[in-house]
Length: 427
Image (cartoon, rainbow, N blue to C red; front, side, top):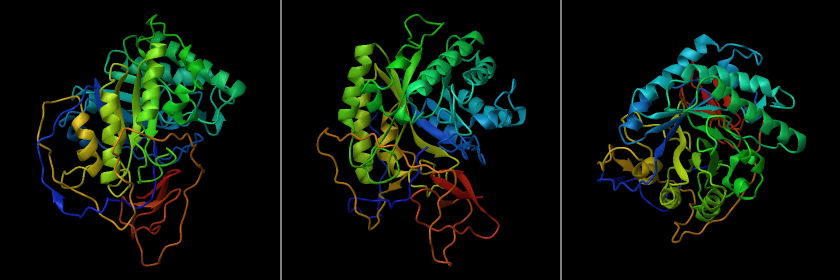
């Protein structure tokens, strides 16, 4: 999950509305869609849990009606098992809420990605070393048993492992093998399983060979490993963290190396997180990246953009539809045309070009990019900032988070509630 608080930029554009026009469908992707975040809220990057806030199912049809056929549903491990790592059953109350999202996706004919959003950790302990890998396998056995009869459920083992090395890394890879085995043993033999990389699963780390041990994981269901996909996340700001709304690269050179890596190793991948600010500069860069990947969709099968769901529409990387049904600028101007479903259509809404006084990145004129693998700064509590006492945040709005510099006082009747390192929300 990536959140920032820098201002939206606009390349000098005005706030005048851009007239809706027929979209030129350009997708060669097998899969394409969006993250619906919320069931992962409260999870820190070291696997501690907090307050979860699952979204409703209302956004699902909004995106699938536009051609999305893949929805990623991040969720915290603790929430699924009642904060008992050794649990032999799923928490039925929480599962009912989460499963409503899964079924809501499946009922549209789309694919649902179940994503455990714990960063290869449980309450600070690295899975496989500090926390038994068997507990991780047990979780996946329970989930696989529930969804084994639906081939449109995709199992993404873990979101963004990071800062794992040596014996910890070896043990983590072994835990992933246990999880794959457990999924297949539970009877889920036809579904894709998505394998994460280390270092926030950046494509650069796959290319550099940092995750080669993951390539050795075997699949009891297929000798050719064709159902084991590699996971990649890429943000387009200066350090690749997704903490800024100013995009500085289209990352095409990064993706060129990644595509070459996939072909050399006979593997396929999904881009399950990427994003940028709702401004013209980011739209240009993201569109260029998707154009390149779409032309190589035999190895990069598809994407889910970050993020819709329980975020407020004022969150800088928000893809949450506005209250009037219109979409965010980045979605309309960079992502929607690459959705694989439906025929060419007219955009469902008019999307104004955002305009602020912030300086923005220059639009790309060629398929060049820079590369960065900077890791994220983390903490176990929301950051605060000094703001004017008269400044208040309405309910559902952002009130805190790393690098956040806006209002931190919620309107009467709501409380600033920590969701993750980068995002606190008035609830």
